[in-house]
Length: 235
Image 1 (tube, helix red, strand yellow):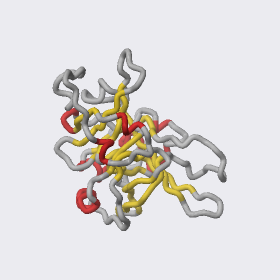
Image 2: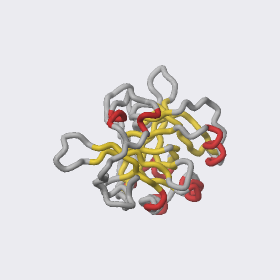
Image 3: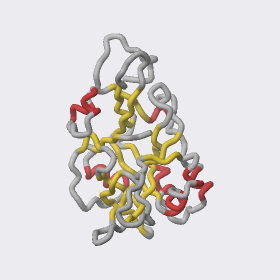
């Protein structure tokens, strides 16, 4: 799964890379957690919009304040058959820009998991594939929310976790956000693991484990005198 992300890439660079105006201030974030808001890029008509959206999918048909799950992830293999996600997969796709995402590795014989920050390699930002939904609470403004699509891990992620977020190449973003593409099979075919050479995983401090910790210390790599991981996968 993907349960934490960071976004500290300058807004000016994000606007240039995604070809969108960002009409609000972006504060550098190093530990974005579910239920919090972050930058989301979606299509409205034939125009790309940058909005702030809440992490955790709230379907538009939710009745009042009724409690229900707000999934932070959706499996790419089954989204097209899901009552919750099928409609959004066809018509409400989005991109979640991220400077990186976190994943925790289970270590044999250890009680605690080992955190990693996964970053783009040879690029400035990751474009995470997502689905969004507008929900109108009673007597309140519309809330836009999203979930991040996941897929099988690539060679970098496999030693860490059995899932990873779908990372779109900058070339694939246009098709992903194209409202004219609404065939579930065509859309699902876009959801593949990113090439191993496009990301790098860096072990970081357990400081990131606490969502209240939101500072550059979260992404600082830790060093090991005797690396336990296979060479070439991690730095």
